[in-house]
Image 1 (tube, rainbow, N blue to C red):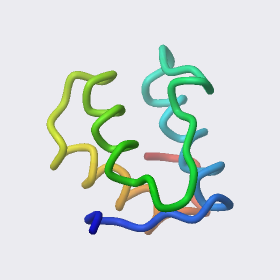
Image 2 (image 1 turned 60 degrees about the horizontal axis):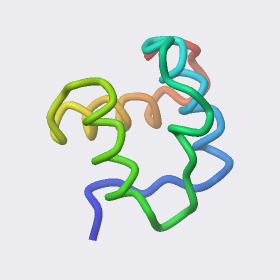
Image 3 (image 1 turned 135 degrees about the horizontal axis):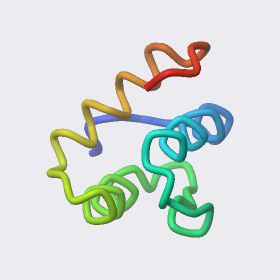
Length: 71
């Protein structure tokens, strides 16, 4: 079981936030289907050169402030 759960609607908004923070990330690199959170976390961790805990923290922060444009 993943540390977080993201639905496809929320992911669209979180993805935009990630791309603003890490402008080298592409839509293809950030492909996501509901239920594949662990694969997504591992992929992002490798792309931004951070550990899983940092990525989980960042995604949780993005989800809590979903209406805010900042990450």
